[in-house]
Length: 69
Image (cartoon, rainbow, N blue to C red; front, side, top):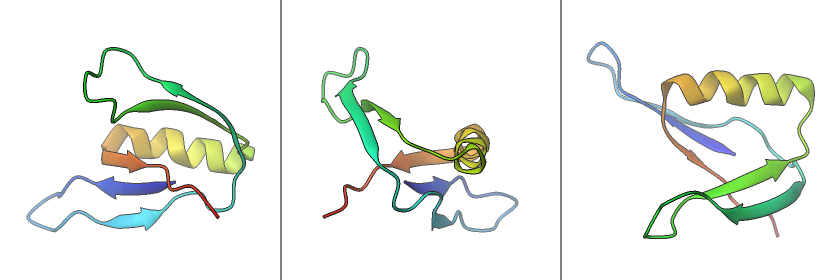
């Protein structure tokens, strides 16, 4: 999961990997997005990873799920 934060106080936003190597358990379309660019993902996170992503959601401009391969 990659997080891009909003710029703050004149500083640029930053992009970082918030959770790496986590299993994707389920993926489904999310809500009313006509573009189909959002989805609901269920990830196999540790407690620490889950708390980090919950915190990131409060200030993130964008959360991006990159599939492994």
